[in-house]
Length: 142
View 1 (tube, rainbow, N blue to C red):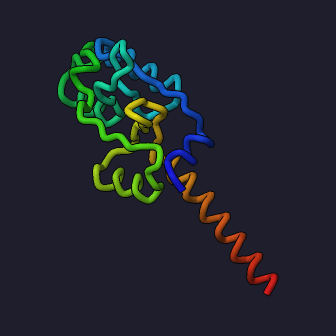
View 2 (view 1 turned 90 degrees about the vertical axis):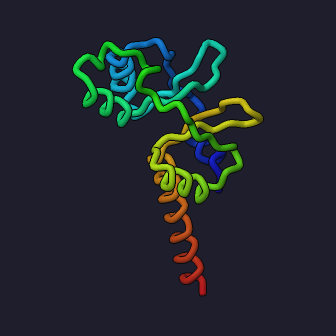
């Protein structure tokens, strides 16, 4: 199973924000969409970074005026991406080793989606349930 399989089920909608938006606005965006991270993109839809809940917490701890800071001041600027054909096991390993929970998915250098660790776990649990059902059916037929 690959990242593409997850995106087929999840969809390819991408939530993003500009680098000059204030942290307070970014928090409202995250809350309204009930998500944990936003891609930070320029007008040409190039990835400049990612702003996660963790980035916001670090910003708030660093200073009392963080809500008025710009997203670019607190985003993670080194963003790991993966191609559509990345296996679920590979992306789980990437997320675990890198200690991040969101990864943009690219196809021929074009952004096609974002998956979270929750998406990966949900997909893996469905896979395991399917395998369990197949084993039970096999044993029952034998």
